[in-house]
Length: 380
Length: 184
Image (cartoon, each protein chain N blue to C red):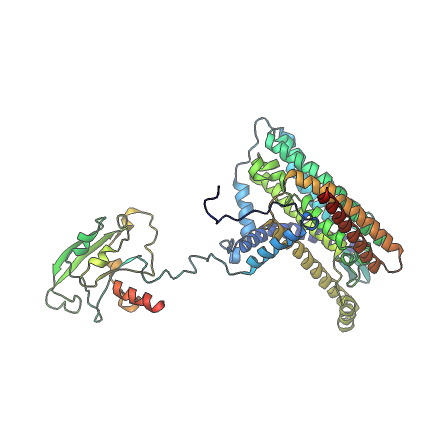
């Protein structure tokens, strides 16, 4: 029992360090990707290829003046970035980074903790994340900060609806709230993205909005609100806000990859597993196969992080009315339709086929009715 | 009123249903940025990599030697006269017996200084020189300085190093024009 606790602790520590480390290097990737997209070379002065750039950035932030405005609510002002960071890091606890490790005849899952309501946990924590922004914006006692905070709150609420309904359609397919079970059901290449492509698109768009990233970065739109909710922040408090955004990005990528792309599942994993256990013995082979799965998962996460950044350096920011229209008039109805189609397909004998048939019927009805409507309108 | 026909008409018709989902536009934009992601970069890692600035770039001054390694400069002072910024000063001296391997003619510059704070790198000294002695290098900048006594460049910094001779594709304007003709 002692031994298992030790291994568990090690796994949790590794996951914690991993999510912090990846988030730190996301800042570097963001700058390099931005540079490459803009035909530049990017940061390359700190260490070989600029590898030490995140350290340099953090060092710079630590040495800056830690300023608190006179009229700010001092307690809340300090708590704000802390909450943002805390909530960002908490959700990584339930993400299944890999299958199981076989140590001394016992299977230990590579996961912080396997909660049977894992996905609800993530959603609860992510919703709490708005509090960090809201408290920071409110405590700053600055109208621009408050505007930013309010925008963040209303935007997150709007997009969480569509996101939640899309999530429901995933749960309808898998019948479980545990992320490990959801991932386990996507064995091999039986990934959810093939069962609900529309849900996948909605989920990715909503997670962009949830992370307050372009094209939905209205809470910190610098040409309207100075810097949004972190206008009054400086030094490492600002650093924590920016950092929590990157941690959130990592977590959302991990969630997208686990819900729709099967996390550590990859085609041919059974073959690899039996090959490795046959060659290297039961215990070591199994562990090596698990490590391979973890690498595959991290690859998927990095792909989505890249997509997040790629989108950021491509799309301009939406106007606020466009943002709200999209959330309530497009995402919401579409996710409900998706849920109905997925649920109906799940009752049919061939879920995959009937899903696409349902989508085709919906597209036909929708575009058909729009065309009829437009023709009638132009005749009038 | 239309002054030219160069302006492009903006399409202000209503978006189609497909366009309203933003997906075609987004896909188009993402394709463009992905293309740029893999394209050749416009900037370089400067101190490590340097660009070829062409044979006519006017950089660091150099006092050329001839093939036998003798200084060409005769301290005639035409460069100093031509210099609009009055950056050049020199002291002439007479060559004595035994110095024939050092100086090409009977008179030479014992002291030749360029004040880099005054120099505007116009290249008029190069044009004025009758002995093909002073040139502005195309491959080397005058480096940054941190104190004023580093700014006045004497003969030790200016005279050509025989082990590392300075060459360029075109020495005169006429050569340059020929080069351009060839490149066309």
